[in-house]
Image 1 (tube, rainbow, N blue to C red):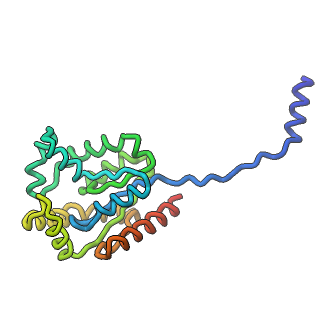
Image 2: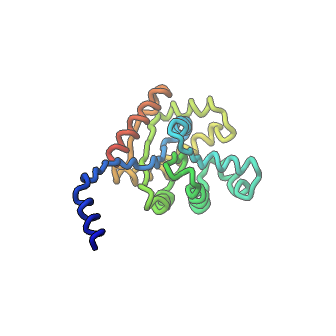
Image 3: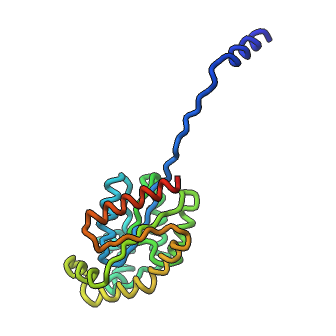
Length: 214
């Protein structure tokens, strides 16, 4: 008992514990939006490299599957060449599997997903305990989109496919922006500006958003 009393006395005389406030920074869970040719892929590459987080492009994943002749590639080849959207079920499963990888813990940039309301709802479920997502939407004039895609010259960028992809984007994807806009999770930026100006605007917008969340 005596030893315990001595210990208690010493504890009472010891200096008060000092607590240091630690600011927890939320993960950078981002979705980059914009019509085909808006430059979101390039901007996603830049942002991901600058912050050491993975860029997850569903378009790249699907094109790689087609090039490799995998089962998934065989399923989606005709769909991609027609400028249509791959089924929700398939694309959701691909993204869910990718987001389970450990390199996404600190954040990620999604390019090309979600493109439909069911996909957005599925993403919400995946990230229910991971802080949700913030959306960066690039707005580009239609004639500028056509010009950029014509210059890019990819296999799925011929004139008819370009117009079809823009129609699909307007019909299917723009409602997803409204889905996030109602939550105040969307930052809309002018994608017509020079590349470096858009990059700087994205950095500023994301930094401001993270501070608000934190």
